Every structure is written in C-alpha cells, then in structure tokens.
Length: 78
Image (tube, rainbow, N blue to C red; front, side, top):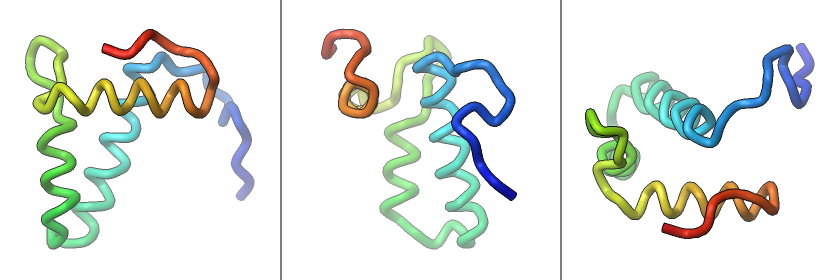
C-alpha cells in the first residue's frame, strides 16, 4: 500500500483536518487500552464543545500555529 498526498479525496478544511487528528489520536488511545494518561488529557483539551470551541482554548491556537508552520498559511493567531 502506498500513501499519496491526496488519498483520492479533496483537500480538507483546517477544521476537518483537526477532527481527523483528534480521531487518529482517540483511536490510538483506544487501541492502547486507554492506558496513557497524557493522551487522555490531550484529548480532553482537544474535544470540541457543542459550539465548536476546543475545551482548552489554547488547543485551537496551537493547532492553527502548527498549520501555519507546515503550510506557511492560515488564519492569524487567536
């Protein structure tokens, strides 16, 4: 199996990419028997509330900074 940049899907929005990262980490934590407290704390802060805001507001700011670091573009820091 090879992985391409597009995987046959359209580009993701910043929010969709964030949700993919959350799902990836949550699945990793589940497979590990939920035994890693640091990942549990990270997931707790990353979780989105009903209004779409991260439980730890710094998480979205950190995510946007990571997007800027990788892509060279993105919204201004919160």
